[in-house]
Every structure is written in structure tokens, then in C-alpha cells.
Image 1 (cartoon, helix red, strand yellow):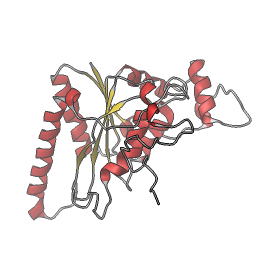
Image 2 (cartoon, one colour):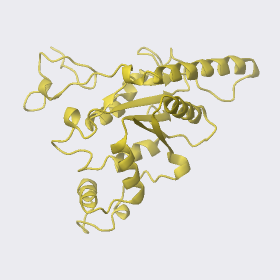
Image 3 (tube, one colour):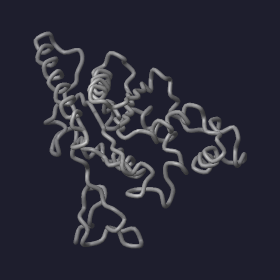
Image 4 (cartoon, helix red, strand yellow):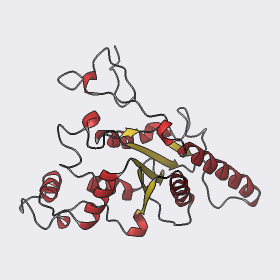
Length: 255
């Protein structure tokens, strides 16, 4: 078994980096071959742009999808993208480790999806969703927030964290992954008053222990339900009898 861990945090001593290290240690202990990538340390360029595709299909206008497919078919993909794509295609488990910034993943991680989920080998009109290139593989979002679990609840001031993560989970499902229920650690803070440091450290230690215990059984980790193609009408709308799994894809109100 193989695992790919992507860390998207600029501080190598951060709790996110710690969780990435702990995940790698636990998986290796269980006999999983692990590749860990620190996107910031690697200097990964998150911007998809024409200069990444010097052997262009069309010079007059940059079409990211067409140029990605052209580069992939002709072995012109940039070295970093080719390496990451090969690791992604070979993995059985993908873990994305990141903090929630401005209610989303850091830009470097979004850019990783933009560049590495290459049009052609990773998806096209027929190669997606339950028929995607990554079908049979699993993906996990391991996330930290600065706010408390109460504030990040469905009725909390910060909004429902799981709902905020849904577009990223859906992106992973789009290329075929079985997406595991996200692992979220709330209340990860720095600069705390002295009287709160010990309790904060104990909470993070408990979260780390829980994470390792759950990763030891990652193949039994619950997954997120998504609608498959049979749940939609020919025009793309959700069938009346289909179950709605998220407010992002739901039945229209009767009124």
C-alpha cells in the first residue's frame, strides 16, 4: 500500500506539520509506503500559466485544459507536475494536511489541484465521478481551524466547517476518490496567555493521539456519500427520488 501526504503550511514547526509527520510515522509503522511533500518547502508554483507549457498547442490563446491535455499526451508536462501526478496515480491513500484560511484551503493547495489534476489523464467528460481515474483509492482532508468547535458548528459564528470543505471533497470525488470524512482539529492557536498554554497543548496531544489511532484503521474510516450518475436526469438535474447528500446538491424547495 502507498500513501501520499501533502502539507500546505508555511511553518515547518506548525501543528499542521506535526500532524503530517505523525500520519507518516503511523502509516509506515503499519507497513504503508509513504511519500510526504511539503508544498511550501518545495517551492511549488500554484499558478497554472502559459509559461508552464512551452510546447504549445495554440500560441494565440492560452486554454489551460487543452494545453494540459496536449502536454500530457506529448510528455511535455512540467517536471514538478509530472512527478506529483505520478505519485498521485500510484497512491492508495491521499492525505491533504492544511489549515483553514479565510474559510478555504491555502492558495498553494488550490493551485496544486489546478496544476496536478491534469485534464486528460486525471479527468475528462467520461473519466470522472464514480468512473474517475482515482476510483478505488481514498482521500482524506486533515484540517485545523483557529476557532472553537462550537463556533465552527452548523449554527456557529464561523459557519459549518464540513460544509466549507465540501467543494474540496467534491473535487477529489470528481476524479474518482472515495473521500473519507474529514479530520478536523479546532481551536489551534498561537500567542495564548500563559494560563492557557498547558491546556491547549494537552488538547492538541489528545487530538494527535486520536488521529494516529484512527489512521491505524484508515481502511475502515467512514466515507462521505455523493450522488452517482444514476441520481441525475439527462439534463443534469437531481432526480426527485434521489437522496440529497449536501446543501450544494439538493432538491429545490417545493415553493
